[in-house]
Amino acid sequence: MSARRAGKRRWRWCAVPGAFIVLLAASVAGAQNRLAAPKPAAPDVAVALVLAVDTSGSVSMGRFELQKEGYAAAFRNRQVLNAIRSLATRSIAVTMMQWTGPFLHVVVADWALIKDETSADAFAAAVEAAPRRLFGGGTSISGAIDFSRLLLAQSPFRPLRRIIDVSGDGSNNSGRDVAAARDEAVRDGIAINGLPILAVEPGLDIYYRDHVIGGPGAFMIPAKDYDSFADAVLRKLINEIAAAAPARDAARL
Image (cartoon, rainbow, N blue to C red; front, side, top):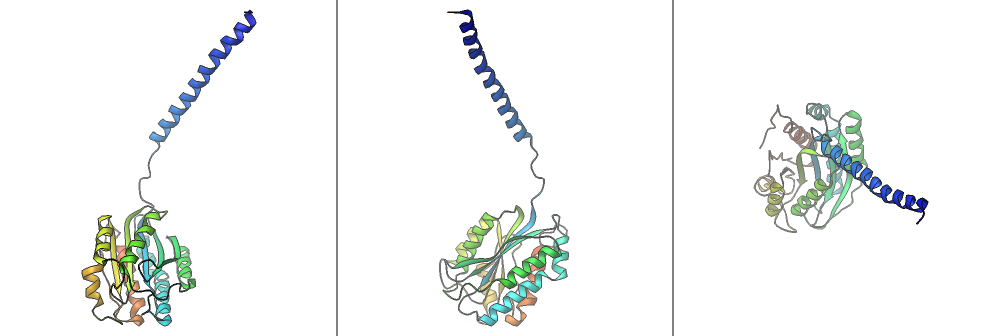
């Protein structure tokens, strides 16, 4: 064997281990950097809130519009924005869905970060522009809770608290037991608040108290009828946001 060919063979033998060592060192350094990288010190938002709006057969188009107007007005209200600004994160995340039967749910306003007047007004405009997508199929509060849990799991935000806010004018008459759905959500650390509208079932607030609301800091604010819905929504949002502020405590019913 010539000296030249032997030299080439020695070069090849040395080159491979050298490259391997370089790659291994880079891999170890990368792993160390990932382990040493600081984790975020705080969640993105104080609250992730799902607004679950009843669009079952008992909700006429006039009543549906009153609900939309109430939510839009609440997010444009200065008291809501001031409550958000009082939070450690100075922000909340919100989405809105319509619900009727056990498997009839539609997201009508995607997850949005609310942190200032511009973002609050943009969400209010999205609520106003959202058409009614469902018109009947029963009243499944349990289905609304189950779907809302999925929305919270898919949220792009990391909240301190997760809340499902159910508004409606009837008791659960379709799908699985509503208390079972509530209890599963509560075990996941989710709070369920209620806004029962008493126009159809005068005792619906008692039903919501016993079967629907639950979890950390849960409360409800009933609306006597659809005309008073906007006032109830405003009070509810302020209470929900205030409950997330360490220095404040929301009134509970």
